Length: 472
Length: 74
Image 1: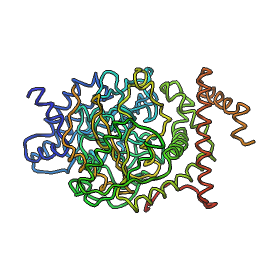
Image 2: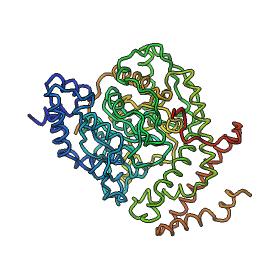
Image 3: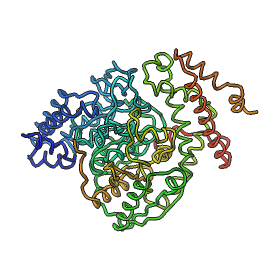
Image 4: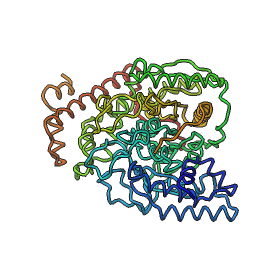
């Protein structure tokens, strides 16, 4: 088969690949080989993968291929290749969280999400780059180079922290990947790389076996080229786990049933004050959002503006809680081997050590009110919409260019409110700017309301039509 | 004078940064220390804004945060 034909396979959605496995026109092994070949060809440029488990992937793909040949159907993710952010533990495979601190760490047990994927017959391709411990920033002293944005290989930042997950999906190096999200780490890179990215409800997906950033703000979820593929992956990884103290035991719907569901009559509140008053955003981002809202209006959704607390309040809560919890999780390593942390995180972690118990508790108490306020929004609206990111992809930190002129990470972002309020949020592609860089918007729903936001995201994605992949 | 303004006035935060860095064996430049002190003050301002909100919202005296922010049925 030619490289071109193999590349076509690499751009198959999860849903399309699953159909072809079942109609006999494609095997999991052929798809896996095509992806491994593309990874071998492009990863030295993109740096999306920190580790490729070709042997393990071939073994799993062969097992899935034989299962289909024998007439068995192990489930919707059977034979589907998956990339994993490298803060997700994998038995027998090094898990570094992109840090020298864990450079030699080989877990002896899979994270719960990996266990569920493997039980469902998924093929683990390897471990994906991220920001150090999902929190740092790229720096030259780190053990691995940062993932590059496939839309701007020269100096483009993917956003973070699920850098490799978004880059791999956009570049056709994995049809679906898992990421984690503490303040936007799934949705931010998804938006900057033109993929879909879903942060599920807090507690919906187990964090057991995921290297923590913040106990009360961490989420795990999928990134994929399509919203439907996010729904398929969520159906596999979601569910109660007694080993995650925050796990929910709510009933699990069939998330894929939401795909294609009409959005007529759905009530959508638009949080414009986030980017019009509390912060700012590029005009092209806002214009793309408005076009998307017109599309949803055309599909019969009822759209109106609404307000919650100012964006800065969510940023306050996320910062105080997140930095304190990060220090609680990593302070011991930092005190004993600070120089193994990258330059950014090595200093930044001190922030958390300086947050008092009083400050942490007051922030946590305030958070309850923010959650209650958000709950009241969902008594009026089926979903809330706002921007996912204020700007298109900036330059990699240290590469100069636009990033130098952009505000730093302390700036409030549009993702944090939904982490603070523990509700699900989906980032979807909304267009390209004049430089050909992706733009994105965000759809949030009530707790356990993933089906609603997946339905809206899919409807929007379908109405907007297919989008190109980055030219590589 | 509050503890926070004390820190700002007497260099308590800077001393804390220097102490933490020493414990971790890090040698920080003056501009690193200045930046961390600034960030620490920003974080305290964040916490103060949140505490003000809690006070305004008439939080019950026993309104401790839950480890499970919402609706976990276990």
